[in-house]
Image (cartoon, rainbow, N blue to C red; front, side):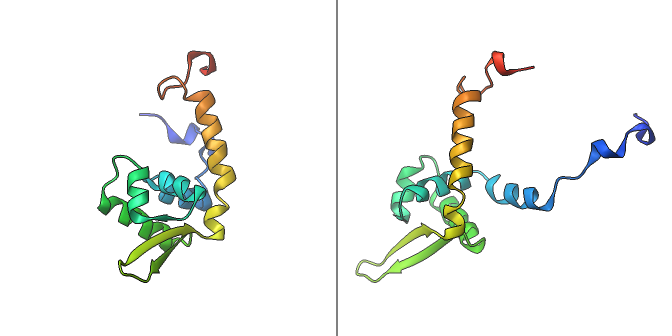
Length: 123
């Protein structure tokens, strides 16, 4: 086992609270994709489900509830019949667009090799 007293403290800084909160929300599967769809336009639940292949109704409902609780998504009920529920991003949710677009550009450059970083960028 390594002697911890020999390890400089400056190299072991904790992750900041802000970054922790971001990844607690956006580190969950599907969350980023839900926001990405809503960046394009307001959408009904069924439209979101079709736009994100593989997501279950339960998971989509959970992610929308989490995003709503975080203040990033607004749920709006359209008077029926039929009763329809749509979702749109709040100002705070729309403010994520530059960061998500940049992540997309990063992925195009560094994860274009089937999800792995190409050899020329390693090292």
